[in-house]
Amino acid sequence: MIDIKREICNLLRPLFKGINLEETIEVPPSPKLGDFSSTAAFEEARVTGGEPVDIALRAAGKIGRTSIIKEVKPVSGYLNFFVDWRKIAQEVFNEVNEKTWEYGKLDIGMGLKVLVEHTSANPNKPLHIGILRNTCLGDALSRLLKFTGYNVVVSNYIDDSGVQMAYNVLAHTELGYPVDPGDNVKFDHYCGKIYTEAYGLVQGKPELQVKLREIISKIEKGGNKYSKLAREIAEKVVKSQLETCWRINVFYDELIWETDIIRSGLWRKAFNELRKTGKIVKKEEGEKKGCWVFDLSDDPFFSSQMDSEEVLVRSDGTIMYVAKDIAFAMWKLKCLNHQFPADVFCRQPNGQHVLSTVPMETEAFIESDAKFTIAVIGAEQRHAQRVVKTALKLIGCKGRYLHYSYELVSLSPKTVEKVLRVPLSAEERKRKMIPMAGRRGIVVNADDVLNELKKAALSETRKRNPGADGKWVDETAEKIAVGALRFELLKKSVDKGIVFDLERALELKENTGPYIQYTYARACRIIEKLPEEALSSKLKSNEYPDLLEEEKELVKKLYDFPFTVKDASINFSPQLLCNYLTKTASLFNKFYQVAPVIGAETREALKFRAKLVDSTRKTLRIGLNLLGVPALERM
Image 1 (spheres, rainbow, N blue to C red):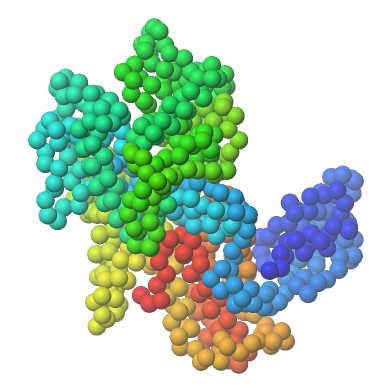
Image 2: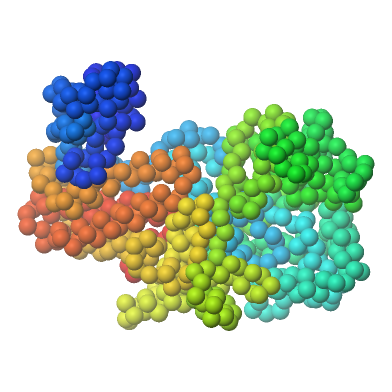
């Protein structure tokens, strides 16, 4: 594919020495001013003291033309370049036709191994919509990195040794809750209900709180009835959580269990490495007496805080979350040589087995040799993640560790009342968002929101397709629901919170998943109706017609796709792809309104528009797949 910006730089290079020409290229505010412009004359004027207008005027007379640059105009010191978009259209059509579903695929990563950790939910309750933002971001990043040449391993960290797990064990061993939920109850939903109830029952009861601390310790140590029950519960919950993830087209390579980090000896290895630095000490007095702490006072970030000591091990010997995460990070980047005993956990619907660490010796094992790891973890964990990165730096770990931070998901008042059926006050209904609050029951489980989205999509699909096969209607509604949810959780910048609104997510308006899906389906239907020769016959260079403005803008956008993929990969930003697909769909629909395809005025126009529709169709499908949004040929 021709790189227009590079071609412009090559034309400018003989005339402008010592200037970073790539940084001078921009898009003018109006197409009338050109397709690209350069500020090279202004840069030279800063050095020579000349006038930008004069420099640009002289340069324009010397700049050559190429097959794609048809005109150069100097305007007020800017050098404006006009592109022959018919030639670019030919390039795009040939590239899409040659690469088909790999259009835009790059080799930025050159096979570099990247471990992406995402989801990492507590295994004692169902996934909620906030965790699903984590899952969708991690999955989209994994897809994007694979598409751009990285060797990606997807890992799910199972936090099965914390206090939340202990509440569920206590509920079964001390409070009389049965382990079997009975018929037609999803196990993770059952456990989430038990956790909430057990939490309430323990408050204000010292004897139960003492027992809870004992259970936490027993789970970590293993080899007892509490740890056995905890693993049994957690494995059943994880299988239920995976069913939710599979429903939205998310799959994993490995499950790493927190208790196995402790029992397999990985934590002990990490602890010993840290102690060698002299920064891990046991407190002999004060409120942290008996605790092992990480002295962070040498780091300017922590030294400015009131407390620059991070507790890694409590006085009772139980290990803090951040300590286990440090060990896990060391393992991911192979700062420590360690193999986890492993076994197949289950076979996923995509046919791939997911491996799991196990608390016993096996022939199989999991080890990591990633050079780069991405931990998709919420913004509320910034402090803990900074501690992890500091520990890696301290022991001289050479791999790259990225905390991929994202903000929280809140709910619209309508969604709280419609999905959760939680009554709100008149004042709350006026608010833009309602924060999730477990104690009030304001937590949207992923399964519930998917079911509500599907219910609404079923109604609309039946209305638009009377008499359609029931199975097709059900499958289509499911895919619309998945697309609506995934797109809604991906389209916003990760440094901004999301206010999830169920009705908005399903709208056939710009910047929603169903809008992109509908546009793709529209392109598919046009292709179905075209005569076969419209696509099969080649369009010669001299047969490309003059382009309507709507055709030119769509060609520009299709040309941009590989560059958008590159930017999205380099910046770890699925949001850029969401923006791209929304704009492309909008431009396609504008083109469709003004440029008849089947009823095109000439044979050349028919062939050109057929190829434009087909290239748009394929580009939309590739982009949707990178976001994990199902592409529908009919809606």
